[in-house]
Each structure stands twice: as structure tokens, then as C-alpha cells.
Length: 94
Image 1: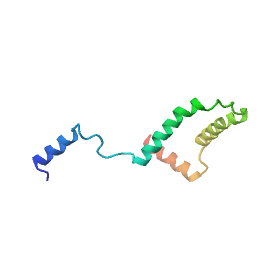
Image 2: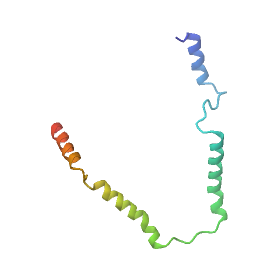
Image 3: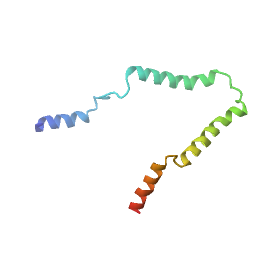
Image 4: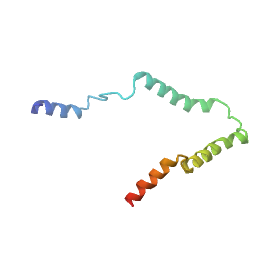
């Protein structure tokens, strides 16, 4: 059990303005990588020349992936035991 004094000390230390970061979510190395990536994303577009647009067929790849995923999502299950089991479960609750 925590005494009242210890409990008050933990509560008051949570609101202390002296403590900036208690437990860091990011390590120092990952912060350096994130800051470097942010700086490169801000500075490199100003330095590098603009790129030409990609070929038209390359632009169709994300659309094809989306269509494939939608077909897979809406396709009925091929396993007959699963679909009959799902029908049985829904019949009991409806």
C-alpha cells in the first residue's frame, strides 16, 4: 500500500513543470532519423528539378490493385463448410 505522502508525491511530480519528458516514446536514433527525413522532404523539392509525369500505364497500377482488392473482398468464400456454418449462425440470431 502507498502512504498518503507517497501518493501526493507521485501526483505532484506528474504535474511538475521541470519534467519535460518522463518516458520517451522515440529513441534518440529514431528522432534523428525522423528529423533528417523531415528536413530532406522540406529541402530536396526546392533543390531538385521537377520530374516528368510517369507513363500512363504506370498510373493504372494502383487502380488495378484497388479493383483486385474489391473483387477479393466481395467474392463469396470457396469453402462450403464455412458458408453453411455462417448461414447456420445467422439463422439462430435472426
